[in-house]
Amino acid sequence: MNPDNYLYLSAILFTLGALGVLIRRNAIVVFMCVELMLNATNLAFVTFSRMHGALDGQVIAFFTMVVAAAEVVVGLAIIITVFRTRRSASVDDANLLKY
Amino acid sequence: MSPGMVLMAAPVAATGHGETFLFWVGSIISVLGALGLIFSKKAVHSALCLCAVMICLALFYMAQGAIFLGVVQIVVYTGAIMMLFLFVLMLIGVDSAESLTETIRGQKWAAVVVAVLFGAVLIGVFAHARLGVFAGVDGANASAGGNVQSLAHLLFSRYFWAFEVSSAVLITSAIGAMVLAHRERTTPRKSQRELAADRFKRYGKDPSTIVTPMPSPGVYAQHNAVDTPALLPDGTPALLSVNATLRSHGEPRRIRPLPVPLPRADSGDSDANGGPDHHEEVEA
Image (cartoon, rainbow over all chains, first blue to last red; front, side, top):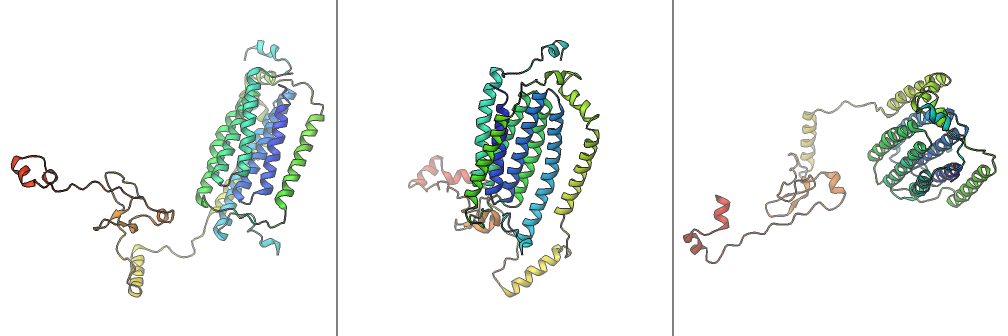
């Protein structure tokens, strides 16, 4: 097997994550799809690190994980706050800025 | 790693059979998991599918020589982040139904078309890129005596500034989460005495209000779970003894009545003979 296949897999997973962000309405599931996209890019980073024979890609993937952890913490807190005031976790219901 | 491994670190044109097998099995599982994440109705199922994808990716990282990242993927993503997701699902209701009305007409199909085109572009770019031969990461791993050591050398020299900034990001996000999730109490908490006074005020207006403590759930030979209702003297279940949250989930647990011993016709005889009698046994 050619190691390029890891890159194709990461492209497919990223696309599926983006599709999920576009079609789902539940804010938590949308958030999980964002996590899937981050994971797909991490796979690409690790594969490129292997391609170049240097560990910089792995360090970048590590930082991606750090930022993802911070993002999840803040994002879930926002979802809880929105749910507390509006009793809904749907991304369609939060539309006050529209008008 | 021994110095011999460094010399042997040759460019990787094709992976070994083991990694090939792992890739095909893992890629099928991860793509199916991603599809399940998108299309499953319940958010908990989506979370489990995402866990499967993440574990597959961790195996891929390890197969590609990123041992540390593979372990971190399992510990941080599958362990911490997914638990956080599940906790939030628990807080805001597992069965919060998803609205199926489209705010923008035809948005779903447009999204599918856009995603397919985007994926085609991405894969096309990878197919046409001159990727070259994979150098393999064994040499880089062995440069400081292992994957973790080599990563640490990079992290604390070339990427030291980014490392410091990431610590600031983590602290900021922790404080942000506390600020966002904090709720200011606008009214003082009611004491037990005030709650009792309120109950009796309500009882004065509506005599059906229950002022005594609720009955506790039933404890039987078959069940002692909290969703088992206590029995009233006539044998009907006392629904008030079950928590309101459990009651709203549907029918409370039914108990199968135990067989009641029937008095035997020749009870007088058996008593005289000292034979077995249920009533006697219960009293003894």
